[in-house]
Length: 353
Image (cartoon, rainbow, N blue to C red):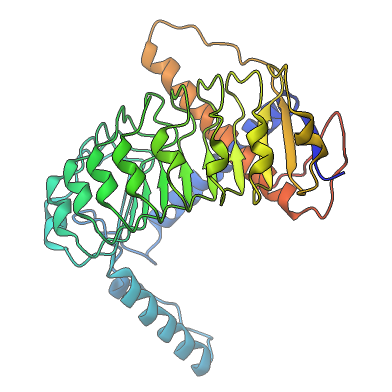
């Protein structure tokens, strides 16, 4: 039997999983408070950098060799960190003015802030390779983002985006695009078809009604997560994604799967929600390609009714984040297995944060 069919009742451990995530966040919060009170590291809020020159190292009792290795490690970290901009915390509502002078930077890591706008001067950062801007309040991407010819990773997940500028298609070296958790994106511009180096696309937790045409033209795509959207069907030519290895479709409105899925030679993991599926090609279960087919049995989540609509949206985002963390752990566990049962009613996982 080539296909391994796993039926997993997602609702059975959601409560346990969310409890673990909340406990983990509480531990992280306490650890963050401890570090902020510690004299080992001074964070300069003026520009968001960690000043490695001001670290106070406790070298008492350490051997000369250990001290030397520590010094070399610190020097290496210092050299690497000078190309990385980091910013976090709800006290930030805009990028610091000093940032525009640091055009040599190669990475931005900005998360959990109240920043809504990416400055147009981002076009000056020609060496930028990584733009990690998850969990902020960003409501649009500037057209200047298309000037970042060396950009390889763009993560603007869990923000407030409703659209993506066509100019993003000019980032010809982009390899990973994460737009998940924005909740309102319904389509992607055709110009993104130019992104031939992209291997990972995550547009989960949005409002797509179909897989965007530009995604079907990303010839190098290996991982596509379009779960938690409004898909009702899949394109009959989905097999043009002949490099695709992982396809995540759970929490959509699919009622059938096209036979074209069998013609995707490298597809090794396919995840769907089994509640609404009424038609599935026999070939999907009888193929000898070694595809792992996972059908999640997922009971509808009760809608939280309250007067404040924004509170509903926030709770939806938190739920999506919880489930995304769970699915990540589940998929990693599944891929590590040498074999899986041809049919089970449950899959029990031991998840550790």
